[in-house]
Length: 190
Image (cartoon, rainbow, N blue to C red; front, side, top):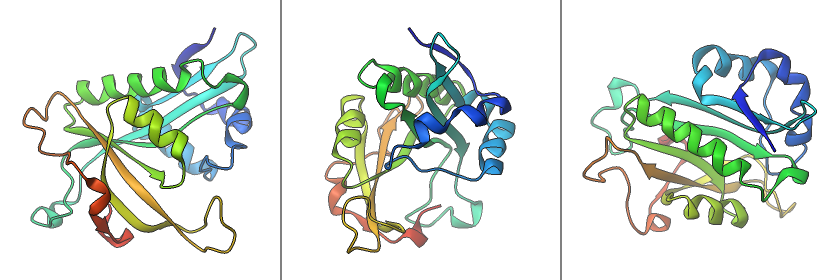
């Protein structure tokens, strides 16, 4: 069984089992520490009985800068999942679901309108997983990723911006149906 707890800086040396997945985005050490410092309740790990990190989720709370308040791309106060991953040997045990649910609880506690995330449009397993948890595609961010995970002849890959409304979004104003039909450029995403 897994133990869930907040990330600690010494965990950085234990993330490699999770980060070796080609669909997991990896970051510089300072990036992880920035999330730890700013949003500790949104950075959780799952560890096995031997203390190995077998999954983690990294998120933040944010909104678009006020200067964009009247832009069609403005984002109100929300939680964003920057990364969620589970080591291959620990998949299909519900760890990713529990980590995501913990972040959603923190989002509600911080009065967020929704939780959003970006996922590669070719990552069908992840898309199915998020949909099973109540997320839907809000829009397509064209050429968001600077590489393509499954086609070496392509230089970029689209992302789906997926969202799940939280309790504050009573009128469901921050989700939409047929999000696959709404395309934006990476410059329109904050």
